[in-house]
Length: 151
Image 1 (cartoon, rainbow, N blue to C red):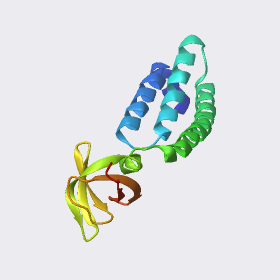
Image 2: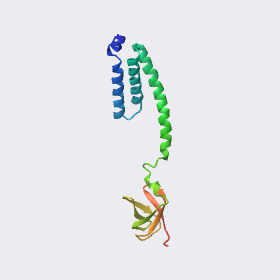
Image 3: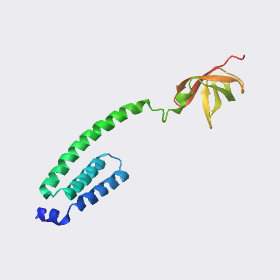
């Protein structure tokens, strides 16, 4: 009964099913559909070239899906481990050591500088606007600065 369905469907359904799974991968946040989709496409392509029974096709699909999920998880785990060094979402840390001009004076330990296209709140010793300050640390959204001695 099940075998009749697989034999009448043909090998192109593996390819179509794989493409549907790859489409789900685009819509849903995971990486599992990717490996099942690739497995289905490989089984479909293999079935087009080699005459396989539906039982062998299913076994190849299951084995290939398991292998690809394991290999894929390890691959992405290594890539995610390196992401902690990524400067994305930590733009302010790139300002450490740079010198900027105070846009607003530092009064009672708080002022503003312009860095690129953004103004940043700074903390440091009181200073008049127009003075040069150097970023020495980052504390959340605040930059800690020191006054650059005038030459």
